[in-house]
Image (cartoon, rainbow, N blue to C red; front, side):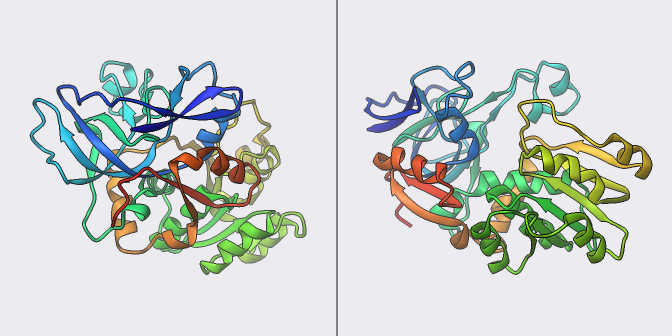
Length: 341
């Protein structure tokens, strides 16, 4: 069996490994597809070296088929089609005890803090699995995790039918948020400077604004008859977007912070005060978000085919990361060998 491991110095290495059998309570998955996300890029760029243990087998957006079940596992059988919700919480910290286990104080994000899916066979705790319907293609199912992120973000923003929603950033998560918000019944505009990404967004029937060519505040005020957006989701991670987000929201509107900002970023608190805005954070997801993501993909609401730029074999992992670094792809999947539909 092969795996792809981050070994430091911006390097991914293909390794031959002997798979261990699943431990009691675990399931061994024959991995079909793994998606590469922005967090994976941050890891390979060395930005998370203090967190990951080298060599690190990463990857948390995946689909696969149960290959073997460990002792004590009764709910899964060989051949089951599955994905993994990669959150392992301690159930003892204040967040867990308050019912917020997905943001556990001591959260193990599987694929970052512990081994992930970029390998042929992957041993995972059985309670982290979710079933996939036979009607959902395994390559499309590799998008369940990022779709769950979008579902959670839209839910945190309390988006309702008829809302005017602005998404700042037209990358993979921004596009998925826009699609999920539209399915909720909202009207959506995506603010994105990159022409290629805007073209992808527009091909899905969504409106866009180019912040380099247009005054975004003026455009959004015109679209909303001067009121401002009901919900603004900041997905870009750009400080300028954070600064403008509060100016785009209506009186008593909501700003949802989705992007990870590693450094403190300026926020226009006068607008928060003046308009009585609500600012909320949105981190990862809960199980209900995963279940909803499976449903949206299975119904074809999420345009998986349009978002998957290409599929490469796991052995091409280094080239796949290079392509993503160059901004030439929306989503790249790695084929880990169990991808027959």
